[in-house]
Length: 193
Image (tube, rainbow, N blue to C red; front, side, top):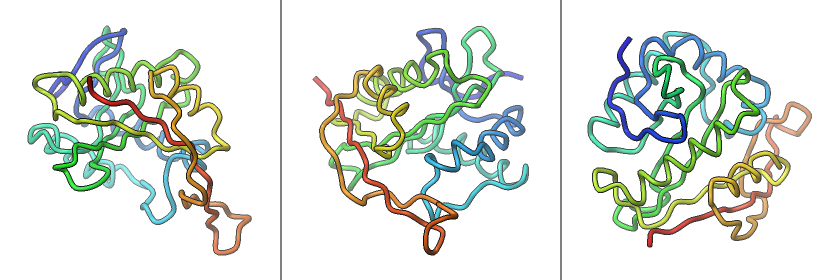
């Protein structure tokens, strides 16, 4: 399988559009307990089938082709067909403001090797500095204060800790009333220039 639409390569990784060959690993990641606990806000549908993943693959390819916000696969540069995780970006406010929110997820069998921080650095570099990229002015990331691993990832990726937002992120919690608990989040950011 050939990767579709390379975005950036470096630090041993490649960011590219999701491809049909990623389907099984994308679904495995979506069903991972850690990802469900911290990575998918309440109200966002959970991927539950390969057919749903097919829609995500098509969205990723279309978004990248149009240089629009969306999700990208993280792959090993030596094995571009091997899905290690994903990164995603969206405009945090109106697109003309140039503020981009980012997120990431790493497949359970790829954790612990710096994939997340390297992928985040590559994504930020593309968003802020690549002449063929979207030309963002600011990139930011929120994570639950309970997710200390995400704080380490953001800092290792060069995203400065800027503060905390109280009761900002609704995450699924079966033990909470209504199955949702609002988390305080740590805000990280980096600006162009």
